[in-house]
Amino acid sequence: MGRLLRILLNSSGLFTFAGLQLLCLYLIVNHNDTQRQIWAETKSVYGSTLSEFISDKLAFLDVARENEILRRENAALLARIPGSGYDTSVDTLPVRDSLLQQRFTYLASRVINKSPYGPYNTLVIDRGSNLGVERGQGVVSDGGLLGIISEVTPRHARVISILHLDTRISAGLDNSAFGTLKWNGRDPRRVTITDMPDYVPIAPNDTIYTTGYSNVFPTGLPIGTVESSEPLPGTGSQDLTVVLLNDPLLAANGYIVRDLFKEELDQLNRVR
Amino acid sequence: MTTAALVNSVLRFFLLLVAQVFVFNQIAWGWSGKDYLFVFVYPLFVALLPMRTPRPLVILLGFLLGISIDFFSETLGLHAGALTFTAYCRPLILRLVQPRDGYSIKAYPTAADLGSGWMFRYLAFLLLAHLLAFFSLQTFSVLFLTDIIIKTLLSLPASLLVLGALILIFNPRA
Image (tube, rainbow over all chains, first blue to last red; front, side, top):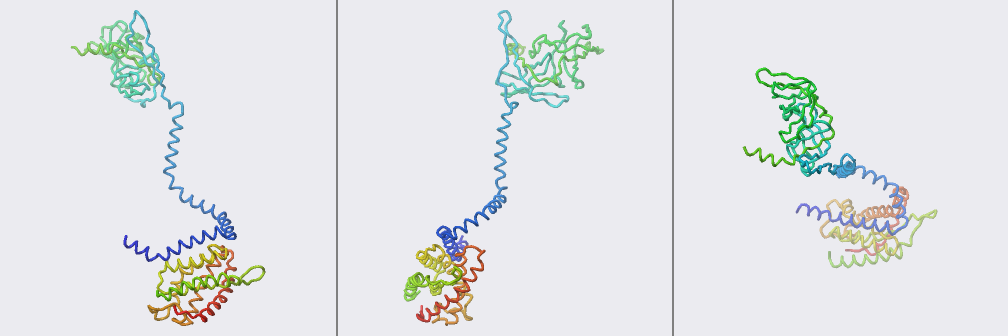
């Protein structure tokens, strides 16, 4: 600080001179006609070139801010694209019937994300806990099963597809024989039913239905048709190969199944 | 700064102002509609300020005298700018024309103190700086460089002559 002060004091003459000279130039340009004209001419000739040069050199200083502005604008524009909207209309139709009390309701949803095809397929739908979607609810699609809800956020839910190695669904024939539906991870059009008693007569093209025992899907929803059966010696059971009615990989819509009796049935399951 | 020097400086300020404005501003000689020869006497005020005057004060006084002359000559800023520049250059010129054994502490920048030869060189350099600055500001463009040089070359001897005469007549000691 002391050094700076000394430098300032030592060059006080220079500062006085510079200040007064600038004042003089200002007075000259503003109070003398010839000089004013020359100054205006000079300014018009060199001024634009100079300011262009300076703004060119200084343009990069502003890039970060400009970029931020453009990104915000991009975000605002992207938000206006129809596909970025979240459909808030609720398509669920409970049926009023005095004889039948409503047990399952269906909530329409769109598939908005799918995992790449692999042994563990999942997908994301655009309905969530805001509309009563819960973990463990089933999702059916046009004419077949799609999967089971595994994660729920306020607006979205993740679905474990039936084409997922961990999926287990209770499925059976219309004669009440039932087994466990799982996927072996090989063919996305075929699933396997295990633990089906081997004395049950099976014919090809028999229809496989959901049993409703797991409270995930309603009873009697068609899943697929039997392609072949293979008894497993020594276990008393047979494996059925089932061709799915729908193609879960191509599903664009899903109906979330909500079991209105779930709590009641859960109570029963808790009491052993 | 002694009282005598102070009084002399104040007197010179006003006398040179009056002399420049009412006498020497009327002198202008040239050809083909342009004036090329002017006489400047007021730089003498800056030249004769005591040696140890603080530099900012010299510059400020130069500015004040210049702006006063400008007020009477309707050239606001011209004389002021030139004399400010001259005042700024004064220490440099003093160093340039320094005698071999330097200035004594009590010396005044006068012919009586340092000799007429020294005074002549000192005034010549000071006037050169002043005239160049003045004519540059007057033409206000490097396009008129020849004009600036011709005006300086003609005005320098004339002004120097008048200043020499003034110093011979008054021969100030401080």
